[in-house]
Image (cartoon, rainbow, N blue to C red; front, top):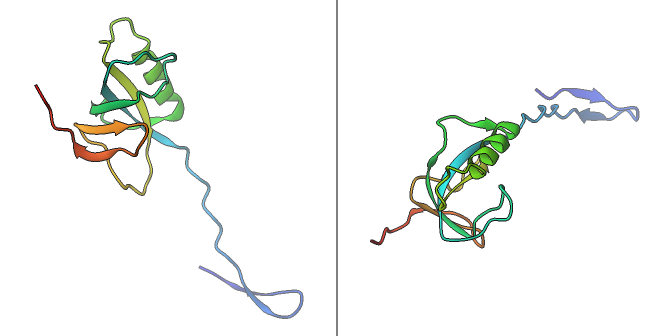
Length: 118
């Protein structure tokens, strides 16, 4: 609720509501199917990939997401075309990833599922 206060010059001023402190960022970790590429680091983003599924049902803190992605992407048991990527969660959603969505680092993700070819 805004309150009116009288300024030092005698005029009424409207006090602005205080902003809430920002909550820490949250992330979702997605498992991707990538075209053949050679990542140089565990947190590289593939040039093109298809989102398969969220790694876990919930969301992660920045550190938890980083640790999960690093562990998955550096695991010797990881299949070569699978890759984990952390995606920040925002309250305003333009496109929500879903299984089959195509990710292209040159463009924004399209929420449409990719057509599978045999």
